[in-house]
Length: 329
Image (cartoon, rainbow, N blue to C red; front, side):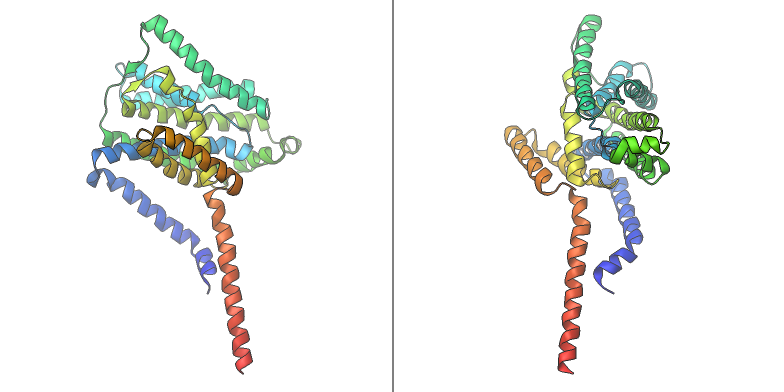
């Protein structure tokens, strides 16, 4: 049995074993790692949620949403405003619910738009959220920005592990359901999907809202990690564009592709951006251009290509051996 057939036969077993090892690693990481590394990995998991949440909606429907920063920032401000009033778990639930309802309302109005019009609107939404939050904060509270009560990094880390696992699991289940098929139909040909009886508006709006809820929860957890929040930090467009690049790098064709991209770019971002700010942004831009040009299906797109090449090489090798034995006889 050749390598490619062996991998294909035991693929689920190998994947299950790998996932168990990852979960064991995450469960034990705070026990033996430094506090700083725990914080870094918690931030990486936040990027995992943002990238997977973005791909949950945009990766299948083809609608380019630039709104992640709006929902992420809403979660941050939920924490900033409610931190003294409610327990942290309840604030997490409220942050996710607020983002869900807000995305539901926005989606009902805007998801009838298509192409660049939807992308432009979501971009404008983030800018609007930045400006209106700054205006209201200055007028009502008389200040710009708020300090956040510190929370133990280990607690935040385990919360983010749960949120990240839930985000990826929901993405996986949606993709394998009839709902996911409807979303793929929308991405392929929305008019044809409508003629086949798919409630395209309902599918888009509800999926958009689910992805936003996870982003809002991530924003709540991110606030204590950042310690300080203002409108420019919470609604930074960086949190809209970086998840897109992460999903593209990892590959949007699978539920785990954005996770791979988020781990790679998220780790580089948390480790290097503050130290090599100018060079990091320049290098990051060049890398993304090269990936879009030469690796449009992302890292996960390399797997079937490598399997085909490896399988072809093995077949040629076996064929050569058979011809050699035949010649000798």
